[in-house]
Image 1 (tube, protein in one colour):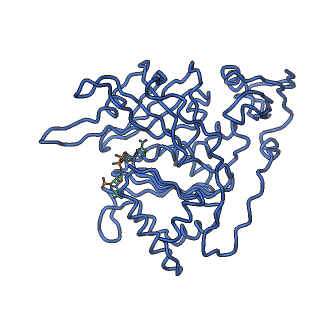
Image 2 (cartoon, rainbow, N blue to C red):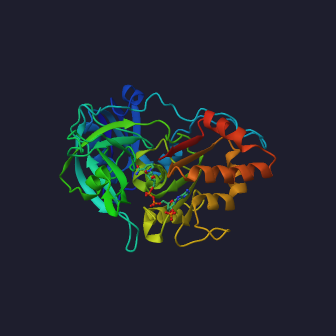
Image 3 (cartoon, protein in one colour):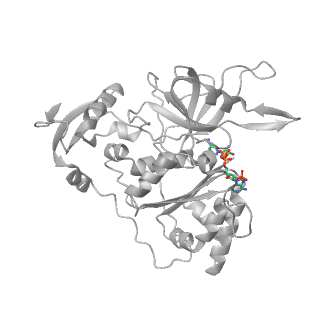
Length: 392
Ligand code: NAP
């Protein structure tokens, strides 16, 4: 290994490039990779590489942060958007080949360890929603995933027939690097399911198991699964996100990948400079999940991130009913439609199935205003891998 770092100090503003072999996912593992990080993350990156069996060939630095970002190889140019296309042009957005699936199956799940479990809602919120993180260290194979995938959780205990509980799928809320950027954790965003039956409050089995779990507990994890909600690698993409409640989980991962400073330093090949627009539906203001992070991204990247909320029990739509995200979509329908005409635009929908007809109605009206038929356009967007839906 060759290491060229010169003198480094804690106030060192230079970027360091690590050339590594046998590190990463799928095809990445077979190729030599160059990872550029600021000095303060160099040690953690080298530990992560060592822990995952990577071989460091060279460590060098002579670039400042700005120079390193500028020197990052530009992605292959996208086809130029056509002038006012009537039909969104199909475009292969994501290579699905290297996405990990089913590394751990229900018969032989991975035993993860809870490292954190905290509430995501403020005082006065409706219900319980928690952010739960699991340590994935020590797996063979190492359980890894990419943004937009899900994992299965098998709760402890047995069902009414004495059989082990079945697994439940949850969308992953962390990026592939995990909340601590060490590539060995996964986080979920879970609402405790509660409903009334015959005058009795019933608690969901798995969601209650997860919301009550203590750090240190071992949990059976399967997966990862899912290729529907993958983020395009295009740093100039427009990403429109429509989320209700815990449906924000994959969006939280996308937005961290786009705007979190630690993530940006870890991903020199993904310096997002497109437009991300999140529509978030929640019943009350204290139910807005990850709201502080989202407001920070908005303040730091005002040209790249828009954040529009629909607070159903505090705001009213134009008809005097509860304000849902489809009402916000309708308010911005022309703008959204103009964005969708650009082949670089992807739409992601996650959360309650009930929002789908409302979103379709809003898009139908916007398309009709342009003399277009949404029922024809939507399947084309889907075929072009630009319309991504995960609803329950
Ligand atoms: P929540 O906090 O209750 O928020 C849901 C919001 O959507 C509320 O403001 C609700 O309004 C509103 N809403 C209700 N009906 C709607 C409709 N027809 N159209 C648009 N908005 C509507 O949400 P939640 O309990 O977390 O539920 C989110 C859903 O996401 C669940 O079904 C869950 O299974 C699913 N999901 C979860 C994950 C995950 O990994 N955690 C992943 C994907 C999907 P009102 O209640 O005021 O009417």
